[in-house]
Length: 392
Image 1 (cartoon, helix red, strand yellow):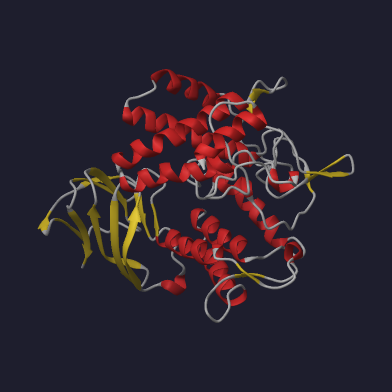
Image 2 (spheres, one colour; image 1 turned 45 degrees about the vertical axis):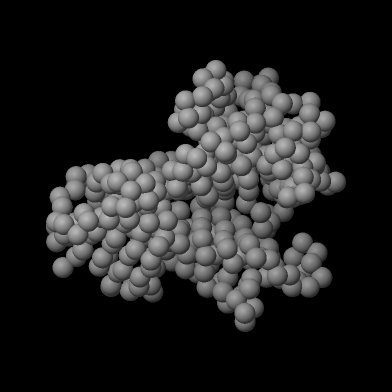
């Protein structure tokens, strides 16, 4: 796709690098779609490419990163060429572009196109940061790294609108479809971590307002993937009650007896219920996000555990940094945690509580890790090492 996207970048935009849009596929289709409201989405390819960097963050596989880096680099080069300076603010912006597949009201008209919708800002930041971080790790392209850092500093900030919501566009436009199933600007909350309750509490609150406004709008377009998104959003916001409600909504209302998820008849003009696998994979991701998070500089156990899930266990969940986690809990409290290192790295593990009754083991031997604030323990691990926390 990246190879095909080079032609599209040059032909459509006259830019370096590669680009793909909403309808990109494995046969090399990277051109814009025929409808501007959904088809003109030049950050679509960069969104896909950002997953390459996240894969590296989970695995720390530098052989993979060497293969992935040219794709990240060429995507970054496209935006360095494509973005222009907003004459009013001095920020670098994309556009014209869309916040798929939404629109706003302006002078009585419903319009989809604007400069640098928030979802573009989120994705451009992510791909530029991934390129810069990968180049630094690989010790390549020093001049490019400087250009990327400069561009990152010139991206517009997130904005909070008149309703207290996270703005979907640079201007605080009224939404043309307040009940729209798409919340593309909330990519900043999940799967990315540009907005978190810990680091950006005001923006996290604004994201929560955006979510509540959508859910409470008349005839909200409740489809399998939009409901699964809500699980992940609420998990990141640490709202266990609402995350669980969305899990139940996905299973009870938007899944068939065979557990395959659906978009219901009538939404977006669908003539029948439509099986869409997005809800299955995104719903599973959301449940895992409730039980384990690693987007901060630490691995967090049971970050969003509902009261109804007070006892349970899991095995083999992966965390960023190259760790695999097995966990059991009882009455809402961790009973036993085991972290296996899949590469050499320092583990920072945040426990739901640190009571002083914990016993720590490294490779089955009693061990005293470094105790950090906020319930975090730190231990250096080599590939294959096993770190355990057990409660009496």
